[in-house]
Length: 207
Image (tube, rainbow, N blue to C red; front, top):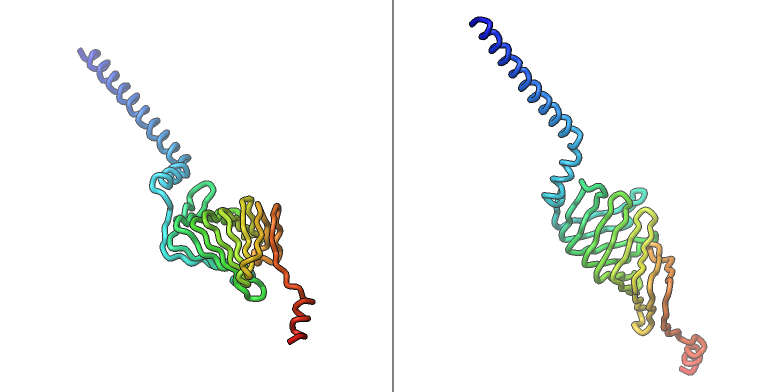
């Protein structure tokens, strides 16, 4: 009888040891798995909950050597800072003011924009209108602004309307410095009205 009790006790002890071993193994596995996947869990929560932050009435200023070269104003911004390629989205559009070296202001408006933080590229879309300091207007449906290289460009159709309202330039694709002093059209046709200086001089002499 005593021998039977010993065997039963020994069996229970072994069973408890096996259960304890498996519980410990499972707990260690879960701990290591959670530790290694912490970044994935964070990104999963980001995708589930939407943007990491949001803001209304945002004003962003871009500087070069301490000097403000551009100001971006938007009514609403969504920040996706936890994405593998973090970006800011402006679903309600933006107003951008560029200031050239002479202090003259050029303006860009768009119905939608996205700012890629790593590359510094801003993607402007839908009803993009550029208004230069001399009242020249450029319209297109898509425009990229490369902040790092101070360059803007598009591969879409565009129209340039000059201050006299009769002269224009239509084309597909252009590149330009952000102060619009270097403008290169890739494929265009235009109509320009140039006043004849000699004719003007004769008119003035008659008077």
